[in-house]
Each structure stands twice: as C-alpha cells, then as structure tokens.
Image (cartoon, rainbow, N blue to C red; front, top):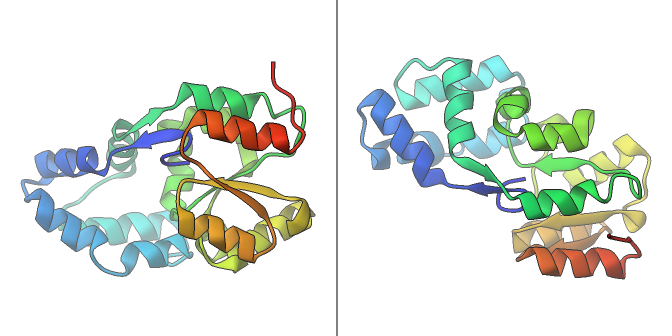
Length: 196
C-alpha cells in the first residue's frame, strides 16, 4: 500500500503528532517507532485495534482516540492515481488482495485513510497482523495464498521494498520490485494481463 498505491510521508505524521502533543518529533519517533513495538504489532501483537491504540497512546505519552489517529494517518498519505488505475484495470482479470505491513488499527482505519484501496480490494484489504506474520517473512505470503486457495507459484506480488520482494520469491511467488508505474505495467503485461 504505502509507497506503491499511496505516497507515504512519515515526516508529516511526526509534525502533526508534535503539534498535538507538544513533544519533539525526534522524541516521538524514538518512543513510538524506535523500539520493537511496531514490528510486533505488524505481526499481530497487540491482537486488537483497541490494544494497538492503547499501546500507541502509551508510547506517545499522550491520550489519542481513533478518529485523531486515523486522521493523522490520512494526512500523511496521498493516493497515486496512476497506480490505482492500473490496479482497477486488473479487477476483471485476476483475484486481487492487498497486503500491507501494519497492525490491526490500520485495518479499522482503512475506510478513513485509504478509501480508494477499500473500493478496489474490499474485504481483501489485509494488514500483516491478519496473518500473525509480517513481510518479508515467508509465512505471511504462504498464509495469504492459503486463505484464498492459490498456489504461491501462480501468485504475483508487488512491493517497493527489495527485502519484501525477496521474501515473496522465497515463498514461491513471482514478485516485482515497484519503482514506477511504467515498470509495473510492463511486469503485468508480461504476465499476460491486458490494459486499455
């Protein structure tokens, strides 16, 4: 999702959290994202959206509600309309799913911060916490393939991070390192998909 379907600016989130809390951006970044908490959440711990929000507030050192958290996440994202249109063109040709390394709070917030993704993927918009593993762990790819009844060898995967692409390949998927829309389009055409 982030850096493929959407621009993602962590600096914007830090600036907004600084305005909200009065804490320095560097302190917020170190407290919330400097430890193991985010990676653990992406792998499913905490195992509820409410648990994630409580942990986030504790690390932030400031009470924050769902609406505020989701709005900040929305403001740090901008849809890449050209890439979203490519994905829309695939809907009648393939079974699509989204997999983003995130905790369960983001899954709840997707309609607020990524309505375009919800429109395209619907119930198939997944965070890694849904599968109790995070990219690039092979387990997350295998569990997702199993969920939808597809062999890894018949599944395509796209990501902007080389380690995630390698993780997918290690699980048997055919993977593409996203750099620009033209490269994604070439990859998909080479796989047999048609575009207007």
